[in-house]
Amino acid sequence: MDRPFVAELIEALRRKNYFFSNAENHLNLVGIRNSNQRAGKYDDFLCGLVMKEDAWRLYVWPFTTDPSTSYLRRPINRKGAAILCPGQYLKVYRLDNHNNWCYTLCQRGGPVKVFRDNDKDSTLDWDSSPVDSGYFGINFHWDRNEPSGKSGVNYRSSAGCQVFRYKSDWKEFRELVNEHVEDHGKWFDYTLLEEGDMINVPPPEHPHPTPNIEHVETTTAEEQKWAEWVVKKEGRFKKGKLTVYKLPSGDGGGSYEVAGINEKYHPKQARQLAKLIESGNPELAQDFAEEYILEYTKTVKDWHPSPSVRFVLRDCAFNRGKTGAARIYQIAVNAKEDGKVGDATKKKALKYDDEELVYRLLAARQTYEMRKRNPSSKFWKGLVNRWIACTATALST
Image 1 (tube, rainbow, N blue to C red):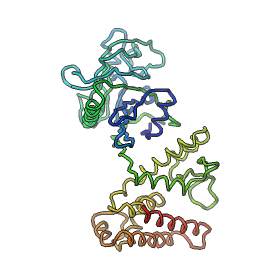
Image 2: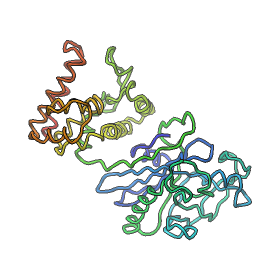
Image 3: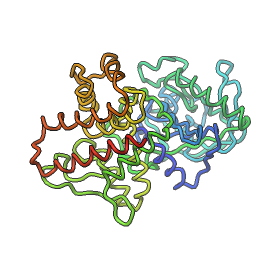
Image 4: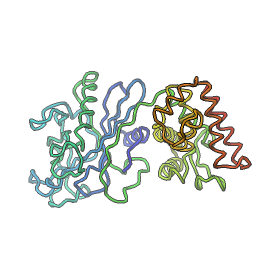
């Protein structure tokens, strides 16, 4: 199961007619349950969707929404192990003491629904178990048995609670909880989605432990401007709506692309975007494309302090990947060309004023491309026009 993007998560909530708030520091908590019914893995996500300084920030933590294998085999309730039912639970959670060892969000404001799995095996039977409603202490906490989360095994962490794989992630979650309490009071909502509720997320090919994933940082106005520019420059539009573009022979990007996100180098994302457009969601596809482009190029954003220079470097990274962008940068500043930007490259770059460096990057892009393409190629004119347009836009930033 892939980490969701902001637009994807919001669209899933809207499609279910679920409440979420865009008030500053309001913590929208959304669990996403993996379709895999084998217990014992941290293969779900908890998402913290928060508006900060007029921009969405999405935190995504490895998580389990399921009871552990030990509690499935030996339920503490005679009706069976508790598996929280998907749905939205409004004003059900507040800070309280969980079993005298963790001060966290606890189920104190209302009942929740759970499946009662009572066949005492390690398969999660949410599709066939009876439903029970009540106060069951379905709380949020970390894996007390292994706070580091190193093994990724969920053997005895939960009898039905919502559990973080890493204690460090729970601490980050608690900081957001405190900010919410200060601005919006003590009560919290929790929404549990299923993998199938997400837009065009394919089921996993096999069960796998979820890696520790860092949250997506706030998108700045500068970054948003660049991402929108790329989509408008790369994308093909019909009546103002983003469309799928069939690539000409010899392009090298596969058979199609959406906003420059092509089938060959970004197969999963290209497929998702095409499906969004084909299902009548071109606006969502455009938002998804902008988010993915920013995520794909984020490693280069600390290479230089100037917004104009960063604008060009991001564009280089999107077109030629991180290593190609690094080589273009090193050509521009006469640094050792090894495809890895370190302190030496950054120091050399600071010798040039911003405008000169932008123009040097323009020349470096041509030098780099001439190693790979013949200027007589039918694509060369388009490349040159792209570099010039990027340079002009960067200098206006």
